[in-house]
Each structure stands twice: as C-alpha cells, then as structure tokens.
Image (cartoon, helix red, strand yellow):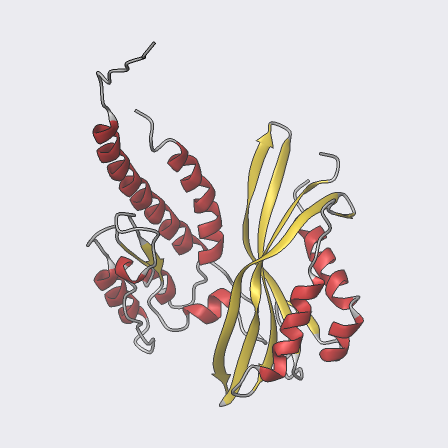
Length: 145
Length: 142
C-alpha cells in the first residue's frame, strides 16, 4: 500500500520574508532601547559621553555623525573614535541583521571598566543586560504568523 | 529581598581572599571596584558591571550578574600577571549542587569573555588580564 501526500499550501517563502523583516525590526528596536538606557546611565561631567553614544545599523542607518558633532561641541578635548559599523561585526551568516551601540569618545572605556584607581561606572553593560532579556523575549515570537 | 547582590560580592571576596596561592601571588592586594591610590602591583580588582533577573515562576527568579575580574600589573607584556589571572579562573569554581552564601544559592560562575587591555597612567604602562564572569544565583529557598 502506498501513501501519497500532496502539499497544497506552502507558507515557507512568506515565513522567510516575514522572519527577516521582523528580525531586523527587533534588532533596530533593541538597539534604540539599549542606546537610550545607556544614555540614561552614563555618568555626566560635560555631557559629551552621553551625547557620543550612537547606533549604527541595521543596514546603512546611523546617527554617528550627529553624535560626534554634539560630543565634540560639549568637550573639544575629547578624542573621537571611528565609527564601528555592522560590517565589522562577525555574524553566523550573511543575512543576520546587526546594530552596533557604542560611545565615540576615547575615555568611554575608562568610565565603563574603570582603572586600577578608579571604580567602573558602567553604562553599556547594564543597558545591554536589560536589553538582552527583552530582545530574547521578542525574538521567541519572530516566527509567529 | 533586594540586596542579594551583596551576597555575591561577599562570596567573591571570600573565595578570592581565602585562596592562599592567589593571595600570595598578589601579597593580599585584592580590591573591590578600585585600589587605594598608590597601591602596589600586581593586584586583583573586581567589579560588578550589570545584570538581569529572569522570572522562572511568579515566585521564583534566577539572577544573572556580570563581573569584571582581572589581574593588574605594570609593564609591556602580560607575563608578570599571567599566573594571577590563571589562578583567578581556577579559584572561581562552583560545584554542580551550587554554593550557599547566607540566603542565596550561587548556581554557576563561568567566564563569558576573556579580557586583556593595556593603557598608561602618568606615563606608566598598565596591563590588565582576566575575564568577564557570569555569576548566576537565586534565593536559597527556591
């Protein structure tokens, strides 16, 4: 006895297109959320550190130029770092959406991680920790129809 | 319970200070957040960087805390602090059954990312070697 199965409805192409779009939106939303939280947590003296935080990606969108302009206006002594773009990030495959959240002033690292005589005042790590949990929760539903 | 992170701080303090090999390597110079100005090297400095709670049920949670724990020295190469960083990693072990400290259970402590950095303070090259450690814990009665 043979059994024949016939596929009458194929939603896989639609699912794939929807997946990529939703994933990119989730990444974008998470990046904006993370950046806002990092700005809120960043320590203040001139305000340049806060102003220097930018989001690059997904794709070509970036607010790096605005961030460095404002940061430099608040602290002309700051060294401005080059933009970290999504292309610089290793990903599991070519179609994974990527966004980078980073500060663009050179002393951000010292504030974040501290030195031997200066305690850390982290703002990126706490923002990333909170955003990670929310992002994972959103991505669980990325394949929902 | 809202101050449970202090128990993790205490566990880290006890674990690092109670290891004779580590304290010998740094002559007892193990600090939370920062060392006193002028403190000699090598030293160990650790600090909490961030974390998040995950609700398991309505009444139970698992907290994930991220710490930067590193050996600090002076010079161009990492040789002088390599054994210190090695010992930090060896000491931060949690048995499968977890470790109870006061009213929390630390369920795991694992290095999530290695850390290595150089900079200079007042012209003196400073080296950092260690890692970002993920410490997970929950109330001991869960």
